[in-house]
Image (cartoon, rainbow, N blue to C red; front, side):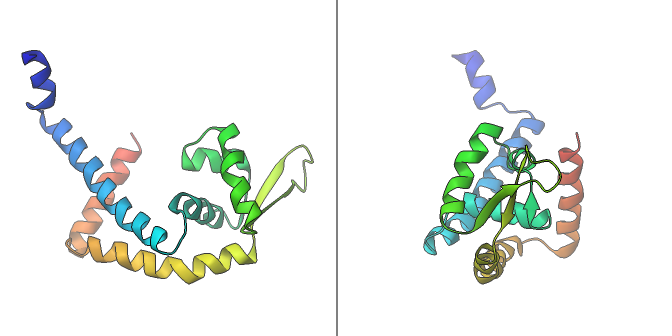
Length: 148
């Protein structure tokens, strides 16, 4: 029991920092997720649409799976509701007919244009506790962690 207490209560600085980062991230994600739910939308599906747009509006399912951290078989399950709602479409790859490409539809783009600005504003409001200099410093530190 005492040995376990060391791992639960006596946390070294790097572990304290890790858990502070996890908790803060969860709180910020919750702000965004509550917004999407209030609009009758699913934040995970919105993230997929955003990732497709980041890639220019069309992406390979395998690349999308990698970007959002799911397996290749699972990406198909995630894409089906978006396709059924007319937010994305699947088509044969123009150069390799064995592959499929995912494209965001005009309806998917309209959905993002309608709701993303307010979502981004709500998240930005939470981030306003940090000054611009602090935000830039935090971004440098997070990018440093991301690259390790």
